[in-house]
Image (cartoon, rainbow, N blue to C red; front, side, top):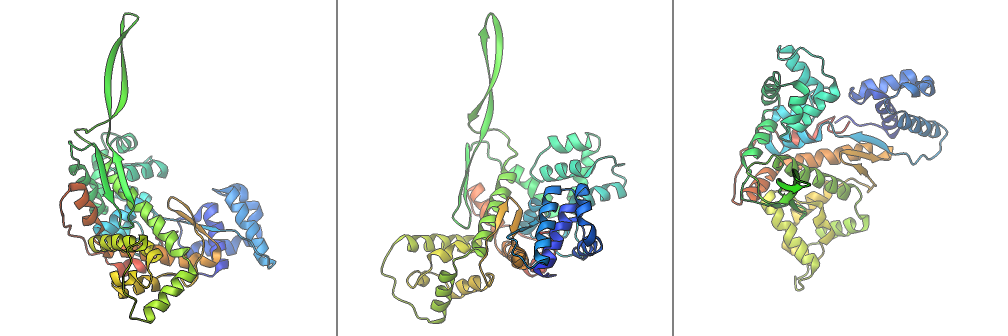
Length: 398
């Protein structure tokens, strides 16, 4: 993975705000160096002028040797598609959305549209924002938005392209539709960090009544089973997305004293006898049980590891988790899949998101979640994507 200095991250952030966030790292840095003396005049041309201005002011302070306290922003490049690629292990899907490095920063939305044009499936005339809406919502089982963007005559060609270019992600999206249970009014599942998800099924019920001698009709929302539903895929992927944010913050902004004490304890085995059942014991038992089922160990378990609870787990697995954390803790500001950190921690942030994605690939996350949705153990055969491929990715965040 390509690493950068704090000053380079600040330059990249300014280039991103100008509108170059879809370019390669080297292109962004080259643009900054070419325009360094003209940055003030370029503010009116920036895609995000306020952010561009803030970044430039921070850069000027750095040149004077002053502290800035300015966090740079790095966004996931199509996080929904990325997570679908990870849980299915689909290498081709992963290559489309930067989960696997292909030598350049891909823009999946533009690339899929261009492929449709190259294969003669559409003539053109749709802007990127429309294509993005179609792809993003289609991966969450929407029919209305893709039809609205591409039209009835072209939407089948769009679906065909999706099935070819992101096959694992698309297949899972369609599989979620078949998992819908018309007898269930609430879907529930538990994430590997013991976050409990509960999604109510809401139906629209038509009711008519007489008012002033005329029949009137109203629709009201009712919590009840429905014959069909399209929300299962979106809610499942969103639940993983939320877990990624929680794991990232836990990994980056950890308690240094606690981690140091765990490291010392792991080096000085054996441990004390387990003789008390308390909250820590309960949580370690719970999180370790979820790990054994999902093969994804949440960083949350470190908050409850001590000389007693370590007896409940494999200490080598805990040590591996501890050693995967950054050398120093740091704060992360999160807005969905946008992450902001001080420039000093840009490398650490990217390494941690890569590690979490790799860990998902190496886990049994999809089987773990689908088994809960279907109410029975459901093994899932995944593709050829590996965690080591993901750890080397350059543009999961960009």
